[in-house]
Image (tube, rainbow over the protein chains, first blue to last red):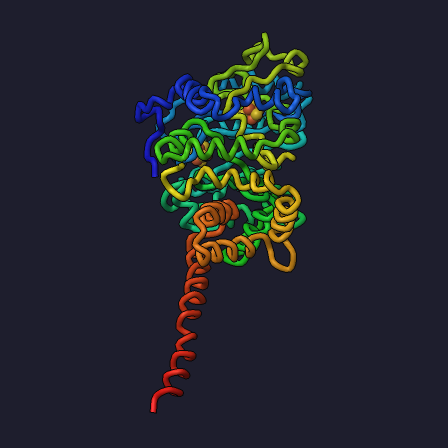
Length: 351
Length: 111
Ligand code: SF4
Ligand code: SF4
């Protein structure tokens, strides 16, 4: 289990340019595998284009109580990038006017931002249809001050989306750290206790599954059945939907792929699983990602790679939704992670 | 000529079998695909059977493919190893049960 972020370890892959260079070279440079652009062209697609905005995703900071091995954010307790109240204020102005039907708060552990609760209270006043908070579950149990989060979420009708790599302790703890499984189970019970995830409940609780290793996720609905069955039988836990997400070859997962000598095979698997259908509904086609410091990106992955939107509007302070709609998406080889098989987005399979 | 009989990269070329006999190749792959669809058995159960049989026929390509497949399906190490022991038990048992034939023969020949 990794204890520190790549940034803290001064690992060169902490630099986004290093990651981009790595993804542009090697097997993609020598022609062994086609670049993402070439692959798009081979399947008659010029470029990915953003449609009208549906999901506004805001990353309120990279600080996290966990240091998961596969984390694409390189999050951890040692990350200091936290959205300020001023930037949140700017986000609120946008939230009031956006046509997006979904607001999606992510991190790190978004709950660790000192202004998180204030921000949720204010943002929920805008009346956006679906208000998601991506909670890593263990945060709810991490400290007394977070124990009431289930009630807080309920009060603001938050849609909770949480990661759970497996229904067994071994696989979960290996990916996310020792003790994570038991704490996550307890947190899920806490959420169930206030009504989250129960059959027919309006309090939505969805789980996100991403593979704990250098392999792609299997069929989402089959995994959902297995998860539901196991969590209910073993722990009496219920949830609504499972989203199966492919790990993208960036940040800590890229570091893991290289260190474990799985990088090439993994890229082969992603390229082989390329599905042109999935390109129509990848996340960036309806999402905009805002970073802790207010810059705009096509998705959370591009944010971590510091690939800004291809638009005159680069920052929340100049926000203009009409101008942003229809922009060309900035892509690189990591995008193969979104187009593999049934496709993958923060909402799971897309095709 | 390659230096080893098996090359992991060859697994990716499996479908090329059809290049030299398209009709039979395609029939085989159609059949293969159909076999692994969920039916009375789930895809997960079929994957575990395939993993166990892969070891029985000692096919490195199949072991490679179905170990990966099992991981993708969230099958645990414990489940995989148990499946292997089933195949090992049958394989060992198959040798051993022929001992009855040996014993019959000995009993017949010996005074
Ligand atoms: S994957 Fe999520 S929970 Fe794990 S370190 Fe990253 S942000 Fe935190
Ligand atoms: S990583 Fe995925 S969501 Fe982001 S730009 Fe590429 S295809 Fe779009």
